Amino acid sequence: MGTLQYMRLDEQAEAQGSIVAEPLLGTWLNTNTATRGIPKTVLAAKKHGIVLRVFAAGSQQMVDWGETAASIFAADALATEAMAFSAFYDFGFMETQLQGHVRQGVLIIAKFDRFKDDSGRSNYFSKEFFYRTEA
Image (cartoon, rainbow, N blue to C red; front, side, top):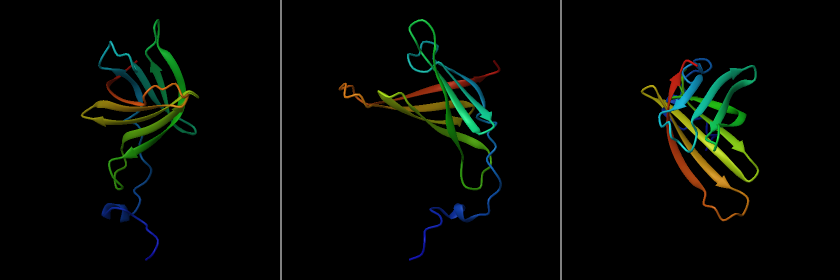
């Protein structure tokens, strides 16, 4: 048995070029203005790649998590337009894995939070919906 080179038939195709990130880039606001999770995210292109900046709900104002690298994904091995991303934050006491994808113009972000501080809190999953703004 040889070395595995692909998992799906469409992965055998010639590369079409790099993924165009523009469909994901911009400022995204939560459709739920009363969210206790993430009211705002920004995806931006930088010299070193795509970065995600999350703004979480705080008691008085949004809490800026800072920038983290984001990996972008197309719909399949032949597509060249970004439609999804994944990113990771490590806060020491907790780590957060974010996975987002755009569907019908709405950015859906799934968030997986895992506590590392032996606090006894349950790891948890949440999902939120965002629309792109010009601001």
